[in-house]
Image (cartoon, one colour):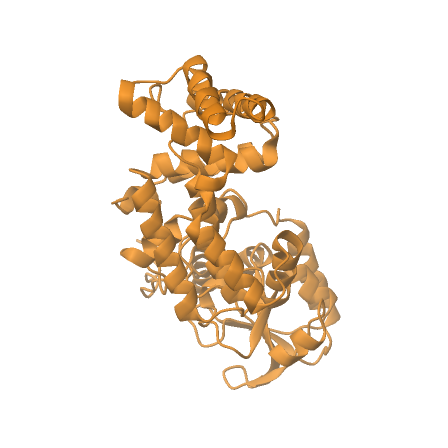
Length: 392
C-alpha cells in the first residue's frame, strides 16, 4: 500500500531566511525546531519613544490583547516582520534568552509575528521559559559573516538598492540585512548608544554634519588620498603599474614645490612611510584575491561612501532623520561611488584599504580579516547584490 505524501506547504514568500525557517517548522508542527530558529534570531519589541529618550539604557515591555490568541501577550517580531520606522513607537532588540530571563507576567503569553503565516503563540510559565533558555544555550548567537537579504519589503534593483549595496561589506560583516532601507538595526536605544560611542553623535545636528562629511568625502584633503592622486597622475602619464620608488620621488618633488625646501622634510618622510604602508597592503590584497595582479587601489573614497550608506540607516534607526532623508543619502552615496570607481571589486578594495589605514596598523587582524571574508562572500554568493546589480 502506498503511503500518501503529506500536502505541500501553502506558498509564502517569507521576508527573510528567519521567517522562512519559522514557517517551515510551524507547517511541520516541529515546535522544537521553531524554538531553535527563534533562539538564534533577533527579537524586537515596541516601546514608547518618550520612555526610551527619558530613560537611556532602559527598555519597557507592554503586554497587549492579541485577538488571534485570545490572550494577553507580549509581542515580539523578527527583523523581517518589522514595520517601517515611524517617529513613535520605537523598537528595542533582544533575544529569546533575555526575554525568558526578564519576563514580567507569567500569565501573559509570548506572541511571535502575529498576523503573519509564521505567527505562533506560547504560554510563558516558569517551565516554559526554562525550555526557552535550553534552546538558547544550544545556538551560537553569531550571525556575523552572513549575507542576509530582505526579499519582501527591501529594494533589490535600482538606485536605492545600489546605494544600499555600497554598505554591504559592513552588513555582511555584522550579519544584518543589506537592503533594509526601513532600518531598525540594533534597536533604537543601541543605535543611539553606538552613534554616541563611535561617532560622538548625540543629536540630529550631529548626524547631519556626519552624513554630509561622509558624502562629501573630503578625501582630497587627506594624506591617504593625496598620495593616491599622485600615483594616478603618474599612471595616466606613463601607464602600467607605478613602482614605489618612482611614486616616492614624484611625491617629494610635489611636496617640496608646494611647501618649500626648508619645511618639506618631515612631510616628505611621513608620506614616504605612507607609500610603504599602502604598497604592503596592496601586496597582501593581491595575495588574498582582493586585487588583481596588475591592479592598484584608485581611491579611498569608498571608505567614506560605504560608511555614508550605513550612516543614513543608523541615523534612521536612532530617529535623527526620517525615511526620505535616509533614502536620499543612500542614493547620493551610490552615485558618488559610481563617479570614483568602475566596479564593485574596485570599490571594495578602496573601502578595505581605508579601513585598514584607519584601524589596522598593518596587523592584518580582525579589522582586515572580517572585511576579507565579507568581500569573498559578496563576490561569490549567487544572491549577492554585487553580482546582481551592475555597478554603473
